[in-house]
Image 1: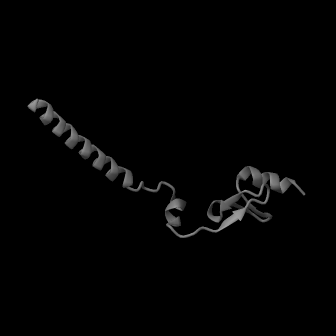
Image 2 (image 1 turned 45 degrees about the vertical axis):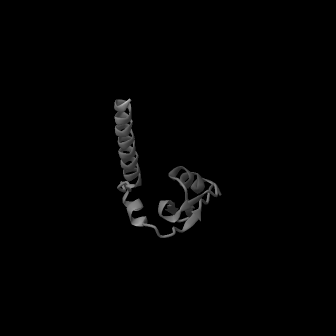
Image 3 (image 1 turned 30 degrees about the vertical axis):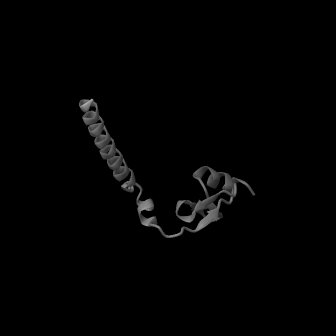
Length: 83
């Protein structure tokens, strides 16, 4: 009976160590891979509507054209063809 209690004690300690380690790793922030994302920080971003479909995108991600702002290159090209 004594060996079962000893084993349980070690299992509980191991479980606590694993949970604490998992929480510490999960809370760690991931490094930014995109230069634009790194420059964003935590400040609010301006959001603009795509001229072709109306989808809202952050201004920093929008594709600019003399005719307006677009959510993608495909919509920029489609927007220049439409009257």
